[in-house]
Image (cartoon, rainbow, N blue to C red; front, side):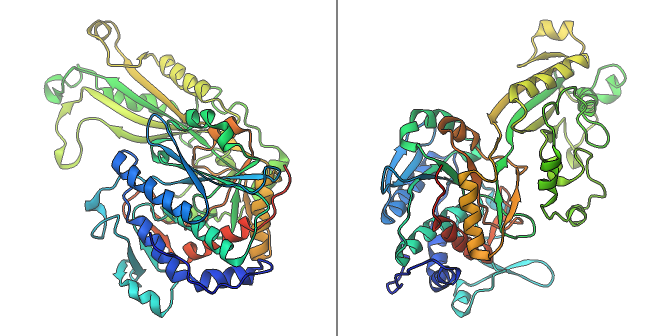
Length: 501
């Protein structure tokens, strides 16, 4: 474990923005060194040896910063609890952090190893080139980036939190709250064991409010607080043709092609402008005038967003981007039937498969939406099962679809003026002198709903990484400016006095 702080930080009577930034700037090189060390630990949740080494590192890191730690056993990887309790009568703040990362394809990364962090700068041609770490000794360019798996999602926020705690301690700050941390090691697997583990450990994790340190701020890179996230459910939908692939010349026009069945089925679910046509799919979502006004205050440059993606026109769910993500969504995340490109061949494939994700909102029930989709498929004339068809079923039914569904977790949304929101907003105002951008709900998903349901706490998210970070993809990165600024943001938020719940 790297020794982070050097001696000599004066005890501060108050944590003004100048004090916070001075502390962060003084220790920026040591901060980057700790980040590099942490990034060097593989963290694929599907590899238990990775997670064991990661947990050992985290136990030492949190222990060095005055936390008591305990592993929370699950049916999969253990989660980690860390706590610093000062007074049972004080408010208790729970922090959610993620430690695991997506798997890696080493061949797709433009560096020796995704777990060997490199520093890069962008040339005038837009390409990223590796530069030596010693360049940091001559000054830091905030636009330089650290490339490594989990740099942004989510070792960056984890490191920012550890650094913020240590710098606050060194400044002489004494919190007026109990602090608990829950570290998830299966987030990238959908946190399948988190809800059960939380329900078994309600006493250990009991708190008055929840803050999540994860994800990017608004696309403008301005300070942001988010108050909700959509949940997620998935469907694997498969249609069936001949038992084995058949020659399209011999049997074309005679043997049905499951790819056409699947294409027609999927096309029936949405209109040409992207609105779900399944009756009842959007039921329960009503955007009041007050909500519309709140959403309109988010400064999205929708024209620039569409242009950057090479898209001419958005879908017609809602009048704006912020309105659109208040509704449940139905998305095809992958399709497969036979072969394409140089491997294509003149055959009728035996199956066609679509992977579908449904983003959930607080007003919609996951099981109900999945039921609506299944009923819609049946209404299109398909015999729907949840497995491979039997020979008897093949002989009886002309159109067969396998529908295998899974609910990962639900949505959550808390009020802007709930305690964690007030705490986060106060920290942002302290650092920047103005209110942050307030986002009612982000479009993505994080496994927070089980925590809220089990503990009965409101939540807010403080995002601190650049939005163009390639998370989940090769060449994931974290902009140095965002890394450094994130430490200051967390210091400012954590130095506020929490409102009484």
